[in-house]
Image (cartoon, rainbow, N blue to C red; front, side, top):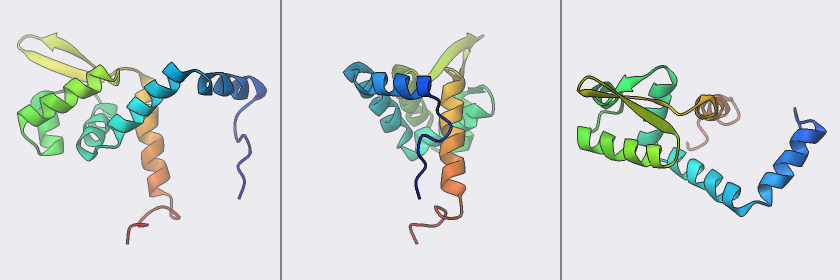
Length: 121
C-alpha cells in the first residue's frame, strides 16, 4: 500500500530533501527520536503534552524516583524537547514547542491504529 507523498506539496518535498542532505539536521532528528525511544521519557513528554508540570507531578505520572525524573528531564532539555522555569522554589517543566506535542500525539495515534495495536503478542 503506497502512501506517495501523502499530504506533502512540492515545496514540502523540496524542504524534506534539503533536510535529508544536511548532516546536522539529520543528526539532530536522530537525537530527538533516541530521546523519544525511552518509556519513561515518553511518559514525561506525554504528561507535559497535557500541560506544564513540576517534578513531583511528573513523578506521580512516571512512578520513578525524583532523581530519575530529574535525570530524564535534563536529557530532554539537552535535546531541546522541554524547557523549565522557576516558580518560587519549584521548577515547572513544559514542552519546548508544539512540534514536540505533535510527535507524541502522532506516535500514540499510530501505535493505537488497529493494524499496529498489539503487534508484540
